[in-house]
Amino acid sequence: MKVALFIPCYIDQFFPKVAIATLQVLEKVGCEVFYPVNQTCCGQPMANAGYASLANSCNKNFIQNFYGFDYIVSPSGSCVAHVKEHLHYKPREKEAAIMRNNVYELTEFLTDVVKVVNVGAYFPHKVGLHTSCHGQRMLGLSSMSERVGPSFSKPEQLLNEVKGLQLMRPARVDECCGFGGTFCVTEEAVSVRMGQDRIRDHAANEVEYITGGDVSCLMHLEGILKRQKSRIKVVHIAEILNTKWSIK
View (cartoon, rainbow, N blue to C red):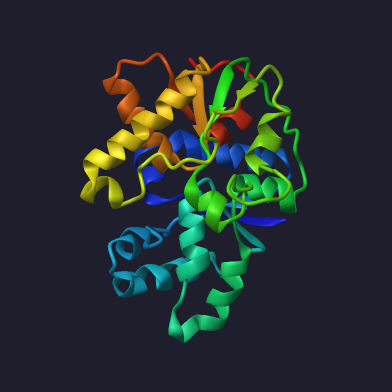
């Protein structure tokens, strides 16, 4: 299984440990992983700001770097959702269409493609799962509470098999954290209040960590937690799945 590792620019710059953990988890489950060294931003910031047309060079570069792999896997639901929805480049539209179908968020790839749930991880802590909007509502990683139907969550499937981990469900399981890309800049006060509400919900469960599949959401929540001088830490799900020891 030839897998290309797609690492969003903000993870590359600020959270490289998440990228390393993703690589090691994929190798642990038997994937042959490649990292295209000339990859850059996928273009999501431009699209979020209403300038999707300016992301054309990003699309061209993405195709040049990632075309030809069996799968493209990323530890960021929002970036994967962007590629699935917006990867277009007229000179290579046929390749773009193939790639839109071959790009996966990490937990989706593990559960649906590799079909593995227990990766042999050990994390003896109380953990709250933040369900990110892009992953839930665009990628279908989990069910939505407002819809009638069977409840499911691919990240929860993986976390429930982590030895020692006690998964705590918040009261409002699929509420937005308020990050929302450019929303946290244009509507700062609303964004912060939404994040505070999310943290309050998790804190009521006395969690030690908040995890999720989008570092952008975790970064937003971490900023609020630090300003509150909270003992709660954030950790990406890839880091949990990759560790057999407590993160200090």
